[in-house]
Image 1: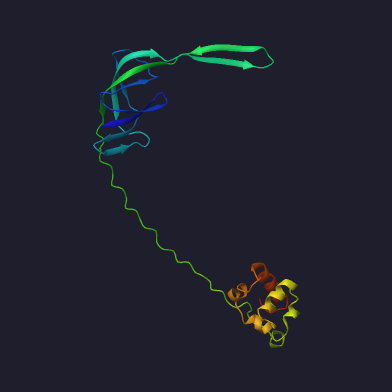
Image 2: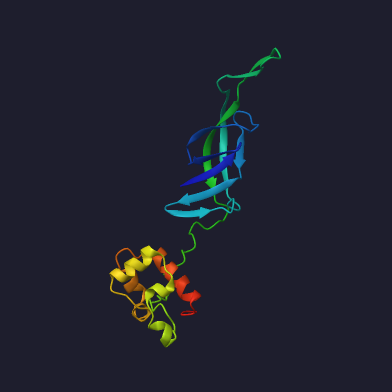
Length: 202
């Protein structure tokens, strides 16, 4: 059985029969003290966690000694002002022997953890590439690719793939166009802009 307590701004893991050194407590040797700031209790694998403390739980201990820690030098200095101050400090502490951990009627069996819920599958709609053009007038569809006034690099890539007319171009979908050598996403955006200007797509 053990507990985690807080005293003097520090946390300690304590068990019955253990000795610890703490500061911030005013007590004399032989005096019995009770520390009520218990953050956690554990006994035979059963754990009670405080929120932030465990209600009704205390740790009883006996003061077995007093002392002072090593000397710490405190030196203050300001350049250019001839300011020098030197001092020292030794932190006082007391030694506690843990006598007992009192549960105060708190049940040691924790609540069963909730069953982990598996996340529900989320359906993701995948849009398949469709044809570039929605509709086109027959007269314009039969014209040459040159009428679209595309950049020379884009027009050359399309003609190199055997697309000479607008009708041939409209019969291809985006996936087929992107598969053409030298025709990338930027070329596709330029083609779309030109088709919109000519009123061939929405």
